[in-house]
Length: 71
Image (tube, rainbow, N blue to C red; front, side, top):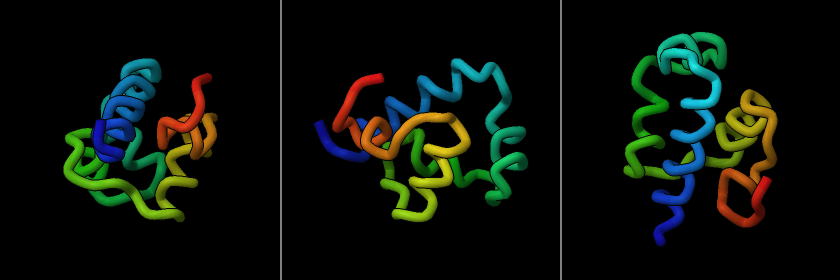
């Protein structure tokens, strides 16, 4: 499985668990509208700073987001 697909799967799962609309998450994270879709669709992998921001927001590790470990 591609890294982008792993990250997309993990992010989609975390978003579903928050039960918040994606736009609310984007606002709370301070990122532009539509950015999360770039990663949840598997089109791209977030860079280091954004990966850390996602990990902090969802309370997981970057290794989890990258598929290196399970929760």
